[in-house]
Image (cartoon, rainbow, N blue to C red):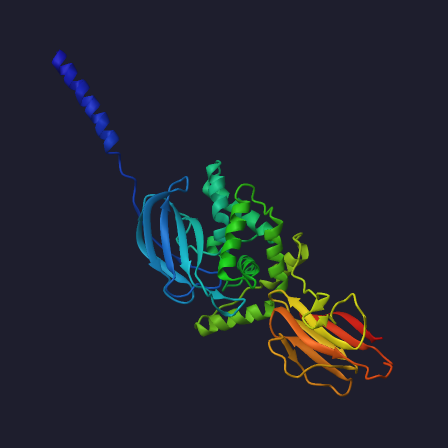
Length: 393
C-alpha cells in the first residue's frame, strides 16, 4: 500500500514538473499587415519591420521584415504568425520632402504601434511616431492599449492646436485623401518638416517624443519655437502644388486634404514664440547698413545693403530716388538686381537665397543739395512691412 501511495505522489510531482516545462502553446494567428509610410510618401526600397509585442508592449522576439514596393509608400507583409495582437512597425528610408519638392537627402526612421485585431491596415506617419513613447508610458501605468492610443493622439493634436473630434487613429490616416484627420496629419507633417534637414527633423521628432512621454504636454519652449518658426515660413500654396504634382507623376489619383486650415489655425492660436525674424544689422562689410531701421541720416560714402534671412524667408527692397549707385561687378551678394525704372527712378533688389545678404551701395549728392530723400520700401515674405527715408546731410 505504501508503495502504491508513493507511486501516486511521484506521478503527481512528475505531472506538475512536466506542465511547468511544457506549457500549453499560445494560439497562433496568421495575418497580413499592409499600409503606407508617409512623411511625404516614403520611396521604393524603404525597409519595413513588424515586431510582435506583449500586452505590456515589450518585444517578444518575433520579427518580420519587408520593403516598400513603390514610391507611394506602399508595403505589405503577408501571412505573419502572431500569438499577440500588438505589433510595432518600424520604417527606415528616404521620403519625398513636400516642402523642398525633392527626395530627402538622408533616411528617416518612423514608428507605429497597432492592435492587429482592430485593423491589419496600418499606416506609419509622424503622428504614429510621436505617440509611441507616450502610449508605452501610459500602458505601463495601467491604461489599456486603446485608451492609451486615444489619449496620446489627443495630446499630440493639442500641441498643433487641433481638436480630436472626428479624427481617426493615426494608423488609419493618409495624406493623399480628403478628410479632417488626413488634413491634420499633413499639417503636422509640413510643420515638423519646415526647411529642416532630415537630421534636424529626426532630432525634432525624437525630442518632442521624449518631452511629452510622461505628461503629454510639450513643455520645451525651444521645441515649440521650432514648430511656429517652421509654420510661419513655409509656403502652403507651393507645398500643395508639390504634392499634387508628385502624386500625378506617380499615376495616383490623390486628393490633397485641406491642411492649410490647420497650419493657419496653429499659427493663430499657439502660444509658442516666433523668432525667425529677418535681421538688419547696423553694419555690413561695406559700412553702415542702409536697411538699419534705426538710422535715417547719412553722408556721402560707401554703405551696405544687408539682411540676414532665416530659412524659408524672402525679402524684396525697392529703392526710389537719385544720389545713390553701386559697383556693377559684385559676387555672391545674395541679391538679384532689378532693372532701372526711369518713370519713378527706382530699382528693386530681391533676395535669391537665405542667410547673410550684403551688397555694396554708394551715396553721393555730387555737391548739390538733395531736395528730397531716398525712399526705401521693404517687403518681407511678399508682404510690405515698412518704409524708410534716407537723408543725405
